[in-house]
Image 1 (cartoon, rainbow, N blue to C red):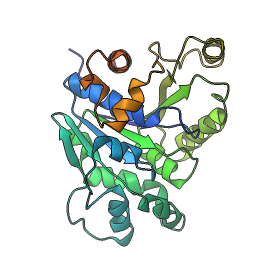
Image 2 (image 1 turned 120 degrees about the horizontal axis):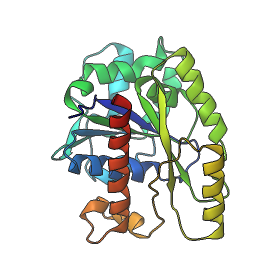
Image 3 (image 1 turned 180 degrees about the horizontal axis):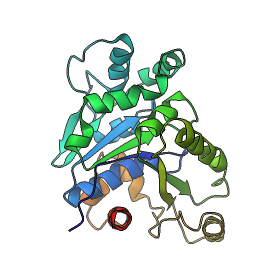
Amino acid sequence: MIILTPKIIAIANQKGGTGKTATTMNLGYALSEEGKKVLVIDFDPQHNLTNYLSDEEHDFTISEAISKELMGASYPRSPIYNYEENLDYIPTNLNLSAIDMQLITANAREYILSDILTKLEVREHYDYVIIDCMPALNTLLINVLTAADSVIIPVEASYGAFEGLEQLFTYVNMVTQRLNRGLTVDGIIYTKVNNTKIANEVRERLKEYYPQLLFDNEIKELTEARKSYAERIPLSKMQGSRLASDYANLAKELVEQEGALIE
């Protein structure tokens, strides 16, 4: 039997609208259904993942945790909330935008999130920690990449799919060389896929440019994705969801990929 080590994954792409939040939520949920202990973290000031998970007001989020960390103060409580069996989450709010500015002048600013996750002992309690990143190349992203073991990049089926992709890889390489030598790229997930000429052309270009990085499983473009977010229901809980199957297959591919690396 292969025993997988705990893993922290950044879901990142500086381009908006690629399906980062949907991937964080539904990949995380699919892994939890496989019996893995999963923590998902909203690290985007737009807080779409937090809205996806809950409509409640959270009295302590990752934003406040970073503020406490910068002041050297203790936490009033843990920022981790339970969603369901095997699935917990850390929410955020708009204050995270201001935190990004504060980090610019902070000492050892690249390691703040790493320090928080160490303090919360996430590797001791979870098999997977999946972080939803904001669509930007900034100090917040550097924090995530410094804390992460790997990166998954959602790329949508559109002619704008390659915008900023090389810049993101440059960022990842910079962090790997200077801050986190263990950081790797798990792969590229092709998202919002439909049966159009554009989608087929982009797929072929991805295969040509990144043949070793493209996941076999793709995520289709279906209206049920919007319904899932609007109703705060994971795709797996929507009867007959085709997208739920996509994410379940992706979760299995990710676990198998990790198992193959360990072997």
